[in-house]
Length: 130
Ligand code: C2G
Image 1 (tube, rainbow, N blue to C red):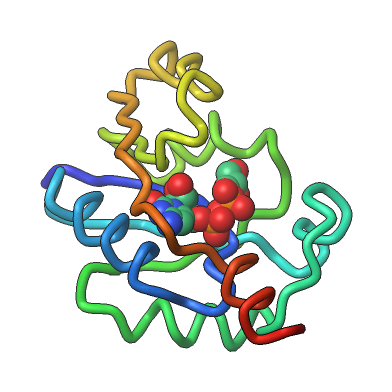
Image 2 (cartoon, rainbow, N blue to C red):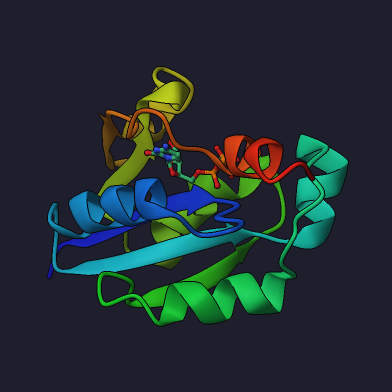
């Protein structure tokens, strides 16, 4: 069984997220999503989520491509996650290209997938005037 992992905030879930999750799942047989906690988002990414971690987790778990959701609480957990979750493939959108190549040292294949153009949570909020 080929196990894939990806990380993110996934706030105000949209089709760009779904495209990413579908392509990530297609790279293996099982997809783990490490979902940024509210604290990690605020402290490390200065992101205030519209939906709480629990609601973002609920939404992700309802997606057919997602097999498991775990919390992302620090930038540094990726190395141990690869081993703790027996990960073969690490996947991120290509806005992160090059940032996580070091995970190859842990034995994972690192894949950056093209982002879906013209959609983002920030853009949605701006368009809605939030
Ligand atoms: N994404 C995408 N296309 C979009 C928007 C997002 O492919 N139009 C991808 C991003 O590249 C990322 C994933 O969807 O791989 C989740 O996006 P975010 O929730 O914005 O995640 P981010 O804030 O980049 O957090 O440790 C890594 C971080 O947690 C990543």
